[in-house]
Length: 157
Image (cartoon, rainbow, N blue to C red; front, side, top):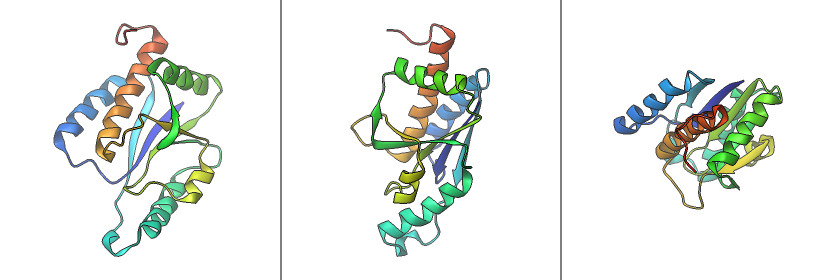
């Protein structure tokens, strides 16, 4: 199963990038994982919020095929423990899914078309995190999920 974290805009904080790179190096032993960046829209300050969401949504939807599993990282999604998240990852792998996209939207969230296309929504917390931080949290949780699946000692209950 190929897992892609699809994000709008690049991570500009080098400290966060170093931490993400650390988990990317660890993840390569467990799964085919990548981060795919959709460039930020040019002249977005001249767009209304709904226009920006629509344009970003079009770019997101161009990246996914009909057969792909699309999971939005969204504040209104379902919250999981790390063990339950690992179970979800394992369930998707065992179901024969070829590609799974976890998607982080732009600063104003997702367009209605992206919500309609999504297979599910996951929330990491009731709190709001920066788009850069959630990328780090996601790669750490994905790494943790694979260590849980493999029965390795990274996660402690």
